[in-house]
Amino acid sequence: MNTMKESNVRALAMLKYQADRYQSTGNGVMSQRINAQIRSMLVEMNNSSSKN
Image (cartoon, rainbow, N blue to C red; front, side):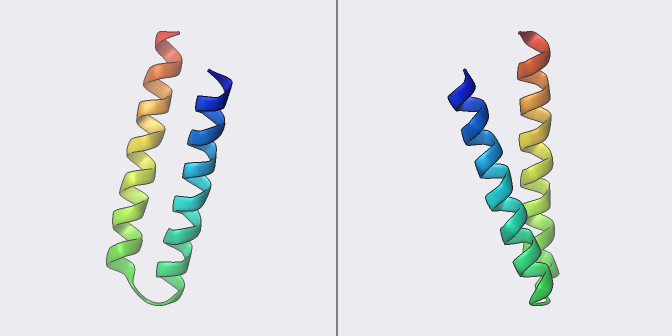
């Protein structure tokens, strides 16, 4: 269970990094797309943690 949470945290950190990079290069569309992925991952993580 802990390794799953750790991998989710790493994935979120990588997505946040990518979103920041796209934002800094002026590619707002990709930044928004990645931020949407981040939000959906957070919702999934919250739903799974509330079930346990």
